[in-house]
Length: 418
Image (tube, rainbow, N blue to C red):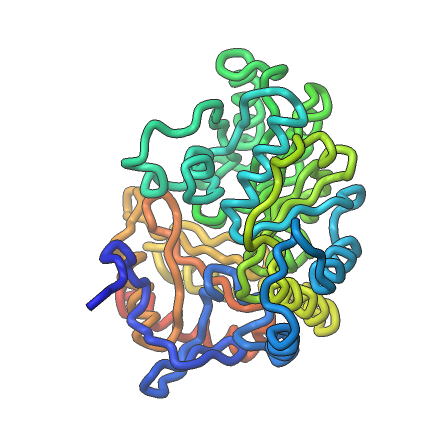
């Protein structure tokens, strides 16, 4: 009898029967608050009626129309709709299936457009699991160990992670920009650097937000040296942070934006957006794929955009995010085992540390399991997996946030005694 790979470890014991909004119901009828959202994917909640209706209607018309062979209406409609929300000047789109594919597409574009070999990524970033994107990922060695040699031409600069360094944000930012300049002088010359690739908020790296001064420094250096600024919005886009794009918090202009996850409410779809001028510099034949821009996924994505806009989900993410962050910090104030709580919008992470300030992955795992046993589904992240993250769907209500925080406080107390 065939079985799933033993390497696929489950974060929770739940076997799902169906989902509705913020809830997952298991095969025994138990209701679980899903504060994982499929790792930030189900932006409109599970099975939003308008997304379901759009997908069902499209399934009856066309399931697959390979988009370098034929065009189809959902793809054209989605492209037009995204033009309404993309950063100014980013008017050309390429669609793929996964975040990893989209990041690789941005890498290919950057190298071909600039004629330069190197890219600079930032410590703690996550960009995917393929060989190329794992080479660009430094949120944990679990994503790249055992598959060396990795792709050449990737160099790593510090991210202004103030808590990790034990500094204030300004000191961490000054250090990160200073080290970036040192990287130019010692490792990757500016005129051999094609792009910076960065998340607005470190995702798998522990839910660490960037800041305006740091992104201004990146933009200034990109402009000075002809380097492209690629912002990986796979987890932070489509309202997740309380603004439509995560980088909107930092008043920065990207050259390329990478999108996926919350774009289609659970249907596989990703892409990159750039200016037509920049996209035209990619080499003929370098963009394509069998399933990219799938008709059903595109229909679901167009419906997702409508729901986000019509139901005010970006604003809801901002309001509920403040509520969630404030509530998580109140729990941390009573719990010495939680060293830091941070995030933007509905991306909130609680970092568990020992009395000596070291990463405490055992306590984080125990609390995550205790929460699951109480009906609150969460995930861990960070280099040491000692950050418990909360990423509910954008449709979450104030009452559901309060319910989750009550369960969280109880789970933390049951493990730590505080």
